[in-house]
Image 1 (tube, rainbow, N blue to C red):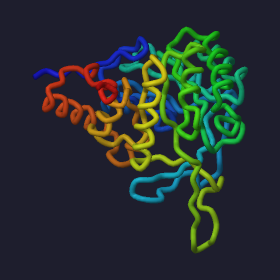
Image 2: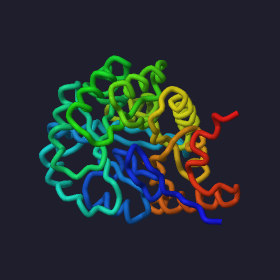
Image 3: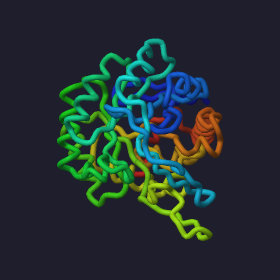
Length: 307
């Protein structure tokens, strides 16, 4: 039985549904190319701000259990101008590159969207959901329906590229937030960002381990939360979803797709299975679909919602 893993995502044609999530390895064209060669269907850059940012001081990442990481990176990146130089020539890149943008307000997001036009990004992702960086995301009150609509609309006016809005699992009005994004012109939703923030304390020193004290939680432990969020979003909007959060295996990806995701993001999973994770997950999806009589992914997107 022949299985087709290619998907169309808000106009993007992907050879498979597995996408490198923002913040993981997307710091250079060379690293993105390594991920593409490892089997990803699309890749996302590390989030870009207008000015260079050093981010939080080390330690910024810790593993707290076998299935849990805490991170407080703080959007360290070289800034817009250096990013334009780094990613200036993507015309022959083998898979679509999604540019991740982050600003402190609608004006900054709009400025970024307008000024990355010289980069051959195939889509834009705006991140409104970081739980641990002052001045951005949830700490800038960007997780409300009102802020989501304002920022999405400002970016929509500056770009014709497919536009994804990355949302947080830490808000009670998630349905209203994604509806606001859709109303303002978003072409898709990315869900979820990290959970929390959480915290870990070194009992020997009696001090928080992360320098920032608090951090977003990622890893397999958050997958049930991500699945629930994607399920709720699918019920709330008609635009496609990139589902991420705790995806390690093909079975995890199938679960996310059945909840309503058209494509699936992988980030922390690289720690567990290295770069081979992209090919392995695709192979595992392929085997599952063959064994269950599915010929194309479209057949199972949102199937958990059917009576």
